[in-house]
Length: 272
Image (cartoon, rainbow, N blue to C red; front, side, top):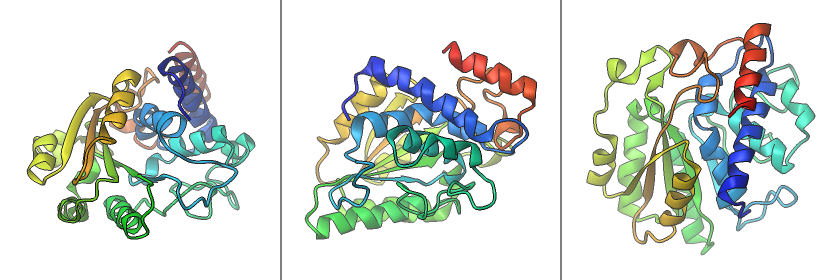
């Protein structure tokens, strides 16, 4: 969509406001991971990806898979903002009969794959990228994975296979907020130097501040020039970014907000 960095920064605020609308008061939701990935999702939907809400089955559209599916609130926020469905649907999230549930489902307009069983999204993306090559389509596949999710074995099977098949139309983005549901990742399942591990597996690597829109845009554009192998962007982020009381807190990985917290979160986001 080609928005400027200044426009993307404003749009990221709107996306965070939309995330907040989806959970409201007293409804449990993944605030932490949704907020940490909000800037990345904004750049994909409003700058980088070729997609059209009026033609969602375009065979040449870029594909996006949210492998850390519990953070799908950020994707719902972007899909509503781009017109895949009404913004009125956001408040119905996780209610009976809603098209928006707690994890991505293909029945939802704009969702490319069911995810939420962690570790599977990169394999799905690899399959789509290979399909594009076989069909001689020019689309790219973007997959956001969580850093906690990297403990899953299937992720590493996909990493090795992607290099083997030289899928240069596959871009993984690691939302590296360093906190998972039960605490700091380094204290739970420390993977060490993630960038070095991708490099050793043959991937082109980029490391950025995942909340710096200039760096996000620059890295996404740089992946276009990578030929003959997949790319990964290690995006260093803050869990709960933008909501003062939730930042870097494992307790807000999946939590309900009180009326007071909801008002505070709205005020925090408005001041970003």
